[in-house]
Length: 190
Image (cartoon, rainbow, N blue to C red; front, side, top):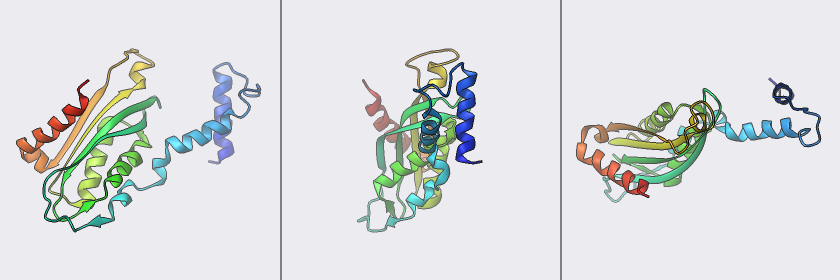
């Protein structure tokens, strides 16, 4: 499918909603929307796990939790293509090596830039980190507002969805899991 095909599809949608795609204010809209979609869905054109392939073994013996907090993201619901806006918390306990913290945010960004359901998104982040870093454990918590519930359908504003995925020591050690969730909870307080 070509870029021109995509632009024509948006012209059809404009006509379908009752607009004139040749109107001055809309004549460039199909081109702009195609460019916007390229940005929204750039995660399809990358492998988020590649960000985790440069690691550091010089940890000074550090073997406790590493936690990157409040990572903002924007995604789109695969059912309605409505925005999902939220934050992610990503933690892991290194076994032998660590990764630059910006790489954790890049993994969140890479998976968020695809059509998603939050449950899969949460699991994809955790599985990528587990697979690439082979840590003792991974914990991911995601909280997001779904515009498919606030902007259409039931139209409930201020509602958010929380999901988590625990692997390895975070699943097996209730104290470590509670420590992770307590740090997340501290960020969520008003």
